[in-house]
Amino acid sequence: MKMHVKLFIPGPTEVREDVLKEMSRPIIGHRTKEMSELYERIHDNLQKFFNTKNEVMVFTASGTGMMEGSIRNVIQNDVLHCTNGSFSERWFEISKANGKIADAIKYEWGKAAKTKDVEEKFKGKHYEGIALTQNETSTGVRTPIDDFFKLSREHDSLLLVDAVSSLAGDMIDVNKSDVLFAPTQKSFGLPPGLVTVFISSEAMEKAKKVTSRGYYFDFISMKNYYDEKKQIPATPAVSLLYALDYQLEKMLKEGMEERYNRHKKMASMVQKWAKDNFALFAEPGYESVTVTTVTNTKNISVDALNKALKAKWMSISNGYGKLKEKTFRIAHMGDLTPSEIQELLDTIDEILRVK
Ligand SMILES: *Cc1c(COP(=O)(O)O)cnc(C)c1O
Image 1 (tube, rainbow, N blue to C red):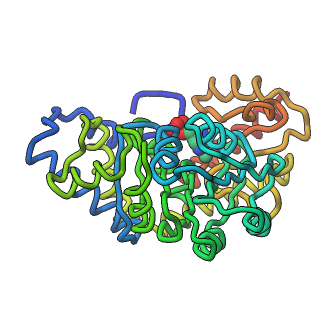
Image 2 (image 1 turned 45 degrees about the vertical axis):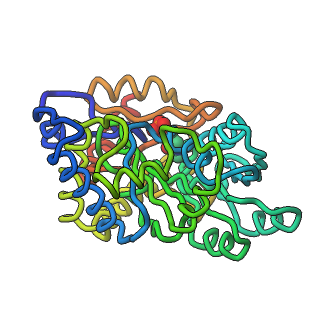
């Protein structure tokens, strides 16, 4: 591929040349038999790869679109958010912006959400849903979802999961959630523009009862359209569907287990490097599998480091928001390989040595 700056940032991620090429195919009409075949194959392969019978939908939007869509579809009034970083805080804001009665358990940035705190909240009142960020990209913190799902079932509540930067990299059982979503530009290793969503039968039943679900992200009309025509109500981003279709074939060949192992290996490499040279920002035991947030204990200029990296055709991310320069983030997601991660770490070492 043409020389370009390789992305080690937590989205959008590096996209391989063969995937980009898929997108240059001629556009087909969105009301054709070819489209029905394409979307049905994507639908079935998503269910197959993630080993689920949950409803699967693909919308033309970024992850934020489905943060809003998920809330609109299954929450009539009350929702409980767990916030532990910038994206989970955004989701809380989105619920309020949609007129929901939203509560939040606010964790310090860097910490993972804990079921005992949610359990405590349910003593005071009932929530229709719990909104949880499985992988908080601003801090590199991973919150496992299984116990939250168990708890949500015990309380007749729904578990909504933002798996935006982890699904297709981390090992996540989508069957342990009611609404779980991830866009294409993070661990799927695709360009931005589509968001996948997995919906349990309980959540579909709930959606039927929720009024003002909105129009564009309405799960019920999306399902009806699929059942009838195997198509999408609005015009989808056709080129991106080509890329997703192609990538799913590759993912099925690699397998979920192997894909996870590759991510885990890259995560271990970066975590070890971070501990040897700096420190990890995440609460111990809750480190993300797809992005590592490094605490800038040596007070280096992250901006200068990134400029030097760019001259060598690589790019990492500064800390997010208030963590800028205090931390920096290295993504190890999508189609990146351990050898590319090694090359990045060696290059950073080289830059920091010279200084
Ligand atoms: C990137 C990200 C989002 C926002 O997704 P967009 O596709 O940029 O709209 C939401 N949540 C998490 C955890 C993210 O990493």
